[in-house]
Image (cartoon, rainbow, N blue to C red; front, side, top):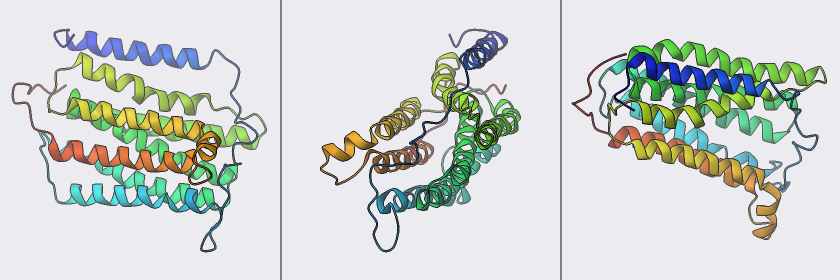
Length: 263
């Protein structure tokens, strides 16, 4: 597929994005489950409620800080230093995820959850744009960055606005999470690699999906471990590991000198 003309490849991506958007609006609004804030592990420690769910967010702060340190040292292989901008935003957003999620788990409610979701959307969209830079070209990725950031933040804001008015609608928020999961593997398929390390990119997506599974299995995991750890706490740990995976990808990748065209 990498032999396709650039416009044909871009058309495939835009058609898929448009189709997903259309499908997302076909069902009625998806409300947040009433018991969403009732996590399995309610244990407190050191004066912190929901101790493990709260403190495990420090892993995001640590992973994001390590990523920012890497970016400040300008390590790794880069065709264009501007390609580091989305990655820098991604690692900064992960620090915000740690702060926002810790703030939310200290006293879970919709108002606090909104801050958590805004930070997560910033991180997701920054990484998506970073992969576009890496695979398609820096110009394409940097043009896309502000668009997807606005769309991602807007999807979380829409949920918060609709929830506050008793008509909660998660459809845009879920759609913006789905885009990177489906479009990034397609990017890897359609465009020749400008860097090595495709498998690590897919591994990051795999870890994110595993984190979602742990989140969905919050109570069953808590029961299976005899109350040792909940699925939601493991979600934090696995998602933070995915951030480390992004960092390792940057540290280990090499430039493929046979692919030099910028789009």
